[in-house]
Length: 71
Length: 248
Image (cartoon, rainbow over all chains, first blue to last red; front, side, top):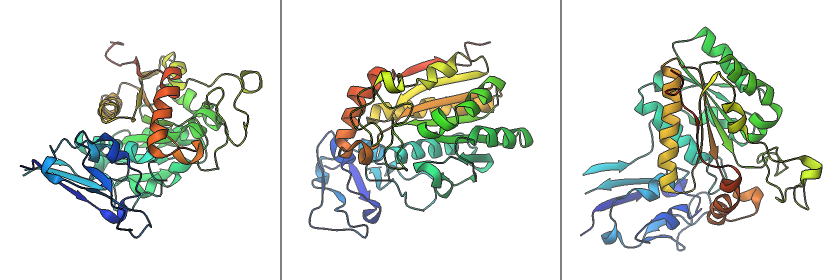
């Protein structure tokens, strides 16, 4: 059961991957199939079922792209 | 459903212009969150510097004033003395605070001006294209030290926090880093304490935040954090150098 809900403000993402490195479950990746209005591939969650809602990704994100809610 | 993390109300909706992975954004968030949590956002007046964060006045959701290069502490002094009831802070980089503005920050601390300074140290001049700063490490390559900084030519990198901690008027001095979520949480505690120092009228407070410059260092954002951990933290040790509780 997923414990968290993670939403990305895709157009604000610059694809820096800092969120990718701090996710303890390693479930964040850049979405290479998408390009946002800035020209970057935005980060997304590949398996939300494993999310523990720790908030590390959101704390690390320099551009306040990520919102995390605990279910 | 409980909110774990959302964008702070202390920031405007304007997207940051910073390069991908630049930790200026993280530090902006911490300052904004602190102002909201202390309930002083409405009373806050920030002073923006010259450097990469020159546009900080667009991002903080409080009153802001732009200052000439390095002169943010002088401007903040004026604002705080005219409006002592307001919470005044400066947000400055190392090219601004540790080079052209060294006199201003030293004397503001010496006078014990009751404002808070957020000092972002990324060991390089970012906005102007990666020149050597007073904080650039020995051996670090920049556009003006292409073979690496040498002691013979430029001296040792300046440690501002240690220097300011020797000044009686500086009542809170701490160096933090934003390289990991754990260190970001510690950095926020230090920033909160620095604002409490001002709110309680104790005196000058400064938090030095070690930051990355992926673009001018020439690394990816992730590798830049590694470079900070391996090279900056050993020379710029993290920790508290002065706390107002000690000076009763």
